[in-house]
Length: 273
Ligand code: HPA
Image 1 (cartoon, rainbow, N blue to C red):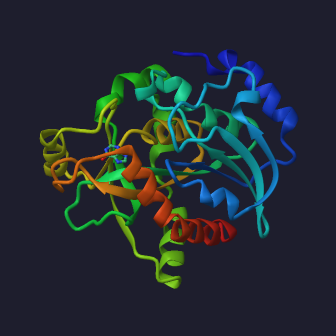
Image 2 (cartoon, rainbow, N blue to C red):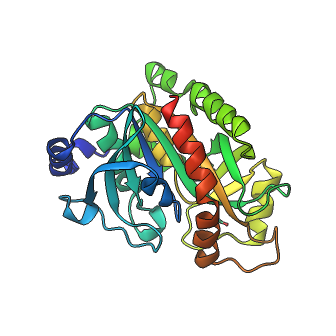
């Protein structure tokens, strides 16, 4: 097993020292969803390039900022930008935001991401609440990360994603007339988008959206007994579902267009958590 406490000891010490408060909840923002951070009252922002040993953010649309913010009565920690397996990082490095969140004393985290729509009833711009996810591609890596499971450790996965947080997100969506789809997020490793054949397989096996992040983060968080929820922004129809060619520009553009309703959903939900 990888000893992340040892590997990231300087990073943990730095963030503990710099944090102005113990957050109530953390949010990890996906591609193009940075507007959420601007909808909060930022107390302190830190560039990840100023944090010891923090992996460099290399993908466009992923900024590499950490914000300590407030929304009404809630203190939140926001990771604007993440690191991905397809950038050459180990999954153990990609879970650093989760480790840092836990280490500074917060045990709730909402993950957001951009994903390709596999369910033919979805359209680009839809938001999808992740009811469950498929991690079949990364079972070995997850074992390297969290170890061989014990009976005790398995209990941490009984409510992942959290039914409590999902209920709040659904209520807020209903109250504000935000259409919130729900479905299964299927992890793909990248580095490229999928082929039409891969997407057809995912569809037939019950996947509703495909994406290259979040699952390992959610599994790691749950292994640390954290409460998690996941919201995907369907930024494009996945390969072969629509004839349109996929591009990262389309992904960030659609995410930006949806980010206002997305920010409203998240902001209102967080204030009620
Ligand atoms: N596939 C994988 N990841 C993605 C996609 C996609 O179509 N869109 C945004 N992230």
